[in-house]
Image (cartoon, rainbow, N blue to C red):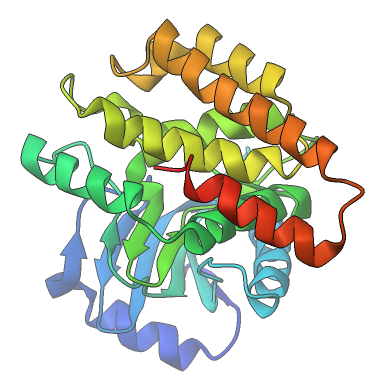
Length: 275
């Protein structure tokens, strides 16, 4: 017989494996996905040693409030091949909401989601970016190539389908990836300019406070505008850069103010400038 390896209480994962056939949800991952009320069951290939490391990292991140789905249990049903890949099942909690974007979205649904992201509370968007940076720093890789790797709900955005990664990630590259993900990777050719520019401004605002300079923002947007769809042009990019350059100058000029005065002044400054 085939040797079985499990993590945790295999009675739980077995109960889902035995009832999986009526819960298939295609797409969204390189693994077959079965959806239940509070859990998802994935079937695919993985390296067991890598999965063990991912479990340790993801559990620590989850304990620290990062919006990810940790692996609860796994079960190998086909032993590892010569390349070290086994096949089996992975059990995770089910994410709230639905895919941030998906490739089969109708234009009107895409634009509706785009509007939701542009109106998202800044604190939730900022947490999404903070979570992303913490995930990368912890040693996991966020795949920005498709919106199905992120789940959107009223609570914010959750990360799914994470893998191990090695090496650091330049801040400006992560900025580009976040902008691309939140604007839907240019899924349709006609979008509302002001909606996308508002998203880019909010993302740039978050990265600016984390040390990304106006020059870096300008370099990324002007060098990769083809990845951002047809809604960015030189005038809009210059407008975004001008905004953040002026905000940085304002911050420098106010360094000698008392903390309370700085907060009041910044609120007044942003009230007239943020869309």
